[in-house]
Length: 114
Image (tube, rainbow, N blue to C red; front, side, top):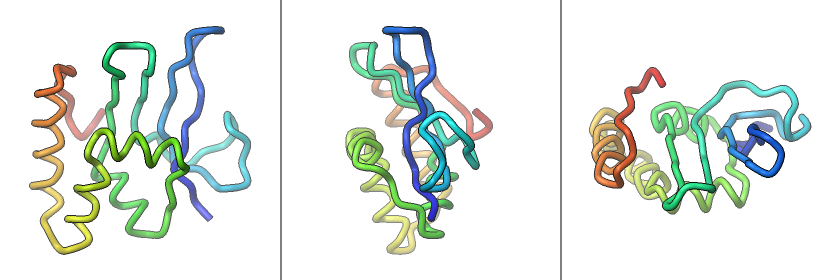
């Protein structure tokens, strides 16, 4: 089973996390399938960059987020957009909305290639 979870990166005492898709059995910093975003809790407000089109792909195919990732999705609005995606809304419109929301929060703009 695939889980969406956090992988710790950064120096000692300065954690930053990558949001990854990984097999449930792999260790926290072990093998993973794909990098889906970055989460930095040390900034105020926390920096969150998510490739929502890839997150929707994994969740559509049965991947489950961990509790901490689910909380990040709720904070960033990804969970609400995924619910709308399940109801049939176009993924392009949802990704564009996510980029606008990220720009409004003051985060640097990103493309889907990041």
